[in-house]
Length: 150
Length: 150
DNA sequence: TGTGAAATTGTCACCAC
DNA sequence: GTGGTGACAATTTCACA
Image (cartoon, rainbow over all chains, first blue to last red; front, side, top):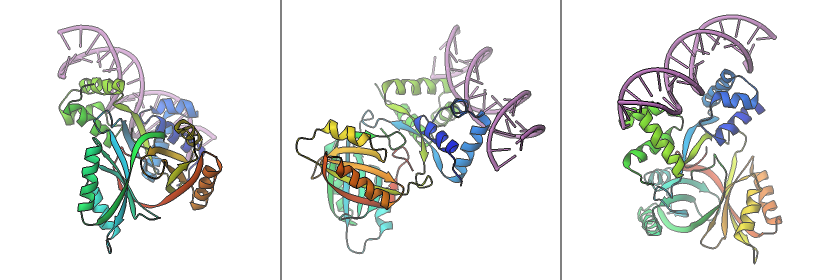
């Protein structure tokens, strides 16, 4: 899985616009479009390039509330069990196990704060999580393309 | 900015694969490809669809460390100033102002934990941030496509 | 919204380095 | 191994119904 600067440039261009044409990329990196395609195909096989996705404005879709919810597990609860139960909740868009006080942090998105509160209650009611501490997102300060959704 | 179920289906399909062809989408939602294109064009004009991006495995690119860093501002520090100083740090891939104890949370990504520590020190040295509290990501438990990078 | 045609893009075999 | 060229297939795009 060698990675040269050409690959990094191509990935940066595709991160900026995932639907850029091979020809457009080729001109910017001074290659032919088949050469670019071969590199992109290789990066996908490697797993370095996982795929492509649409960048959607969730607020425009009616999901205006977002929060980071710290989760504290009950005794003896395994990581797999928490992961499985979080995956079952569509509002959980991302979750990590972390160092520090909390065991994990879930990033959740709901229509509004009322839904947010209901969601947090339901996470607690689940049984795997004994306590939560939430930080509601007021605004986005930084966002780099290829790093998230909206 | 009306949004019907057809639009939502199209956005879901493009979130799953941002390079899906109009014809592929058209078959799945029972429309013609020009009709799909017209809707996608409208969603882009609306701003509902912000664009497309590549989904990259940052660990494969040598950035294996990730953390959520809670930031506590000094007195009188404005949101704009924090946003500007965070934007200047490439390792900050996302940041939000939040409710709760901390003023903001930055999501950062570095090569390793040593770089992570250096970065956190530099955020404190900046002057706008008087204290930080970090939660280092151990593993990703949940990740929905269209919600992030790797 | 669909159809059909033209322009653009993706794809692959083949060759050179 | 990597890259380029040219030909063909697939897709995008748009005028018109």
